[in-house]
Image 1 (cartoon, rainbow over the protein chains, first blue to last red):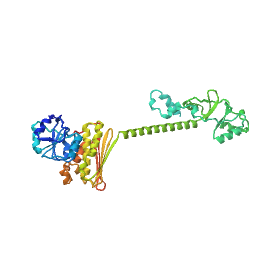
Image 2 (image 1 turned 90 degrees about the vertical axis):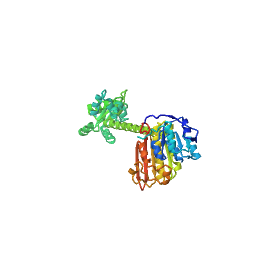
Image 3 (image 1 turned 90 degrees about the horizontal axis):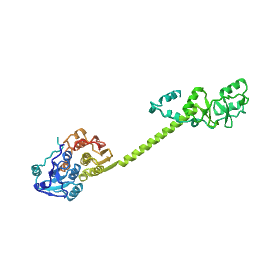
Amino acid sequence: MKSPTLVKFQPLIAALQAVPLTDNLPEELTGCYISDLLSDVLAHAEPGMIWLTIQTHRNVVSVAATKDVAVVLFTCGRTPHAEIIAEAEEEGIALLTTSLTTYEAAGKLWVAGLRGESGHE
Amino acid sequence: MRHAVATLSDVNTSDARRISVAQVLVYELRVRDAMSKPPITAAPTDTLRAVQNLMKARRISGVPISDGDNLLGLVSIEDIIRALDKGYIDDCVQQHMTRKVITLRDHFSLVRAVAEFDRHEFGRFPVLDGNDHLVGVLSRGDITGCLMQHLERRAEEALAHEAALRAERVANDTADRVVVRAHVRTGDYDSAGKLSQRMRQVLRERGVAPEIRRRAAVVAYEAETNIIIHSLGGEITATIDPDKVCIEAVDVGPGIENVEQAMQEGWSTAGRLPRELGFGAGMGLPNIKRCSDSLEIKSDSKHGTRLRSEIHLHKAGVST
């Protein structure tokens, strides 16, 4: 794995039209992974990434924590329950939500220079 | 014994490490450690007949003749046979005993005693202390018995030492071992990852490299969700040792029909609900395999599935 190009997270929030659900936002992101299949994320997400998903149940937090994912962005306006947000805060994972679709959000991230170099060979 | 002595004289310098315990013992032990004491003696005024009876009763073949502590002579079984033959068995001992007796000193090493036995071919030697007092009798049998006894004691000491070391090791192991265990219920999607979370916590506290920690977490999480999605319930255990984590997932059934097939990426038997939640991607077992340093899966319809994965904590592995 080559070392990722870090991208500042703060400017991305406006571009993503995202609403932070937790206040533990990271300074930078290492990349992005998109999947709604949990095992797929376990296989391919990398530490410090932002993960885009429409899944909002608490396993999302477990999976993110397992892989040290920095941010989970729920797309299509989805929002998890309050207890899941609390759990994410405990685990040090930032949660945000956006009304953009996953595709639109991905486009914004790409334009901002974030790449997704991951475990895919 | 002669052979042992010859070897001993050769080993002093070059081959010291190959000396056996018995060889060391014959140097360390003294005549006084092996001799029979107090000596069975007769008085010079006793009859040879009395000595003959003493030999018979005590099953010995030679008797030192003494006056208190002073050695005066020795009567051997040959002397008795001669007395019987010539008809003076009722005579006093002092008329016929051997007066020129070869003795050992009580401070001699057993090696030296063995050499004396070889040189003189006597069955026994009276033993004198530094004041020329008769203090015991030494036979070859006494030497053998003494060596056996000391070897046995050394062996017991070695065993006790070994047992103590083992106990200490076990105590350390248990102290350094953390076992995290959780019951896993079918369909309990909300609880998935609880064990994995506790395990990650321990690994973080122990300063395990993040990359290795993540691999262990993936294995635990996937194994746990497998039980939730596919089984009738089970148990997952993470045993955390200083050098490795062992994750064991055991369920009560119904078993994996074809483990080889289940190991293939994309193959899944998950139902609608778990798939909607993002499970059942058919990547669980392949993920576990990729993250494990060793993996064992046993499954049949009678006993259910038993998965055992090990992750070594001291070497970098697959990037996750």
